[in-house]
Length: 575
Image (tube, rainbow, N blue to C red; front, side, top):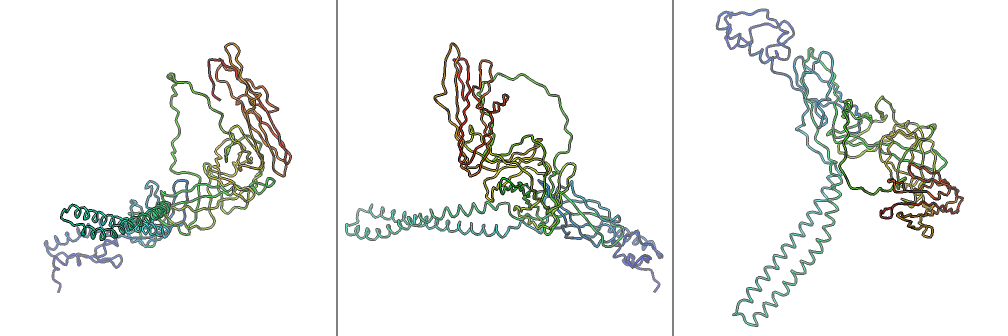
């Protein structure tokens, strides 16, 4: 009673707490700065020394110890760029006062750490952030992948069993053959014994050989099945869910309570590509363009019922201003002269080109997304929440549907392609905010081909091929009787005459833009003259001839043009 406390009990008796109900056991949580001592009874220097040691231990624990919390935030919003995605998570944390370490789980596995942003209330100070792999998760295979993997293993096991059976039979065959050899080498064997051994070995030898033939046939049938199963499995490679990641955050909190947290970061392993359906119901109605996005992601975290936004921008694209450097021009070393090739194709099987035209009014269908145009890119806010699993599979998202006035016409360049193509001229197409992507072409509800739509041009009109019309036939032939070679003095002159035949097998009248060309001289000693253009418009700079041919149903029209080439007779040309 009233004695001096022992040194071992000094830490629990040295002070009375005025603020809160904290005891020294909870000094870390309450914060040592919040406590004051009202009474300290020190009777001896020995007890004073013990007291100082206890206070030092408490201060040390307060300084270095911290609460560790593990939280799974909710993924709320995803902005998908063409080559990555920005993820926004939200959550609330019951955060104690003082220093804490929060591990946010179920975030992307591959994060650009320079883009991590975490925010909370003013009472919370973010001390540090680092991204890490979640050791509790692993790569998850989709049900479809597991099914194909099991099928491949099953077929592979069957093939392995057959190969093992064949090897066993071949070993038995070698054993029989070696036994026969040993027996035949024994000079003491009688004829009757040889006959008996032959009768014994023959059926066994024949049975083994037949077994080997049968198994070989089965292997030949099984090998393609294994190859097919492997090909199917390879198609799904990359469609497995990557392991998720963690964000480990050090915070300092000045007041205990529930604190909201928001975090955004740029995740790799995601993106989208533009795709289009271009439909022409008939040649009198506007062109219908369905603007789609093929979204994929393998970030390690599933996007479940998130608000999805697609952007044509790229945050990883270099932002440095271009700076011109001095351009120094040097003489080339001598090189061999090569022949000049033909002009590039005017129209491929399915092709997109551009020309200058006047603008036309554009009509847009009712959107299913909210489209926003910024100074440098366009965003599409999807109104309906989307779920996209982290398996790298492509998910089609409809962005917009447009109806735009269009001018249809038929185009042909028989010198490079013996076909007539339907083309569509789109005006004011820049209002559509299209980006390069593949397009499916439909004419009268039938798919006629694919093309790559690339609107990155300064022209005002987009010329889009809608596919080949086989009801309009075209043929281009060299007229031998009107083509000749003459030599006069030191020069040689060649005359070329071509005839183009067009036939309209359609039940309606058509107008065809017919294109051809004559060569251009690249040497002063070479003189090229267009002899007959048959009413064509001529571009002398490119050598392009163009006719607008109108044909009634069932009508055939013929067009001829000719040109001559004069050059030294000791030279040669290749056309």
